[in-house]
Length: 486
Image (cartoon, rainbow, N blue to C red; front, top):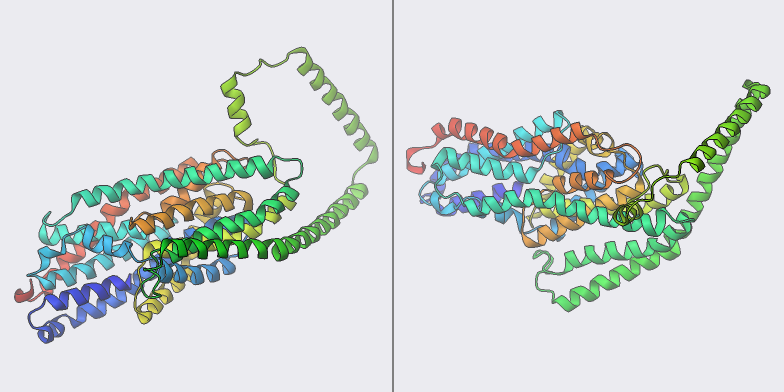
């Protein structure tokens, strides 16, 4: 978000008649803006960045510390390598900046108010454990200060409608991608007689798809800073395929054998724990009672079987049979070996999701601005990130490494595609939409619809609340603007 301040200040100074006089009057605003930008980055790290890794922590694939480290790395890489369209859409697309040609002071103070309004709402939402979107908050704050300053003059309403539509499209599209992938994984791996063997066979393919897609997003119409914006399509495809093949080879020859050893160690630990439990039972329980319980259990089973024979169920129709075949068995519990296998690929998709999040929330910036922003995000992430991580990763639905892989991949694909198109969609909405879609069909803990209702309500109020705070700050700060710049 610091790139907004830099861009706006440059534009404003260019429009000013007397640059030196303008700097003299508004130096304080620049300093306050830099401080508020750090506060906004802090709130972004605590809320928006945190939820991107919530499912990985909730499934046990990553610890909190590992999630913090990976988030720091891949958010930065996503911002540098891919994210370059979204900020320009928000700054120039939501409000026509031409209406401020003769009021440079209003423009600069408005940006300070927008930073303050966005930061205020992000911090409030974080302390309420609600995952919200920085993108939406910035759009709302931009509208808020501009309406307070210029009324409805210059508001690009069709752009606002398109942005609002993308907020609904993003969770639906992300949910569909994640759900489709989970159903595919369920059919080819989870419900088979040997899910571990089948999963290890498919693992290099998953690596190939993830790395190929990611590399294509980087190389095709990529960062102007790295001179990737002019790479021809065919070269981008070749680079992407090469990266995917290398990743698949590394997975097949290095990662799969490591996973086999990891699973073997887990089995040994489970066996030792099981033996210890058996010893405790044999010492503490009365063998005669056990025998009676076993006999009664057998009798009950036989009785249940005879009842089922006497009253066979009505054969379901074709549509019901198809749905039953298509959807996972909610009573099935995945084996620990299967979940251990998916831990590796979920770690990859967690990095993928963080990369996509960074791509959707920034554009290429001077290095010193980027480092300042990364510092602010890291401080917020490490200080308050656990609040939102718990909401997304554990409270809303039960997430395991298999479902977490599908959730993160669907959200990342949606966010990266939107970033390429310059759409300021919410990665938060993508992730929550994927969690709800997959959690609705998988076994285990069902969706906490009460919590989802609260989260959805926070999405709805993000734009007006952030806009309201920005309008309030604009009204208070407007009195500081000299008449010649108002």
